[in-house]
Length: 177
Image 1 (cartoon, rainbow, N blue to C red):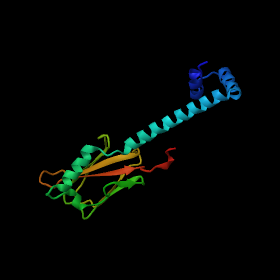
Image 2 (cartoon, one colour):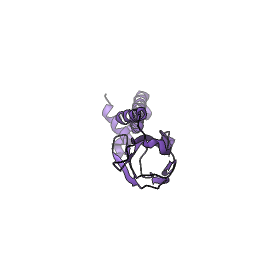
Image 3 (cartoon, rainbow, N blue to C red):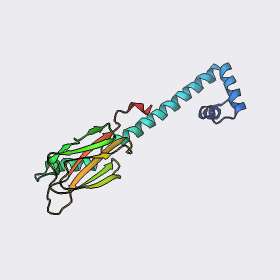
Image 4 (cartoon, one colour):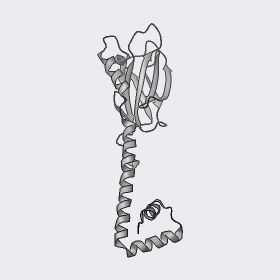
């Protein structure tokens, strides 16, 4: 007799109380059925964990276009905004609720800050006024994953190249079990 549907429904919790009780009695009497059920349970559990691990990994995948753009900016010969940025560093692992930006000196001109996730969805935008040397952004509402921040001049007379860097939230997060 093929118990495939019954095993599946048992493992998914889709059996009514009587059928569930009867199936558990069958498991106690039939060791082969018990082994097949346990094997199926192991397969389902491992499959779910593999899918979960893949989804988790996708949150941290680098975005190719951002990575290429960062590389191109670093190779450029013009003055860059990143020359004034002390923190956060590239690939910063943000473990606090705030992402803190620090500059070498007060900003001479305003800059636009944009934060996007690795799916290029804008998560935060702000204009940083001239004179700022340090400020924080609340990232407690961000999900775990890889993010990219871009600082670029607002004024047309500011010819510095923008800076793009990445940071991560929750990388190595062990509590996801």
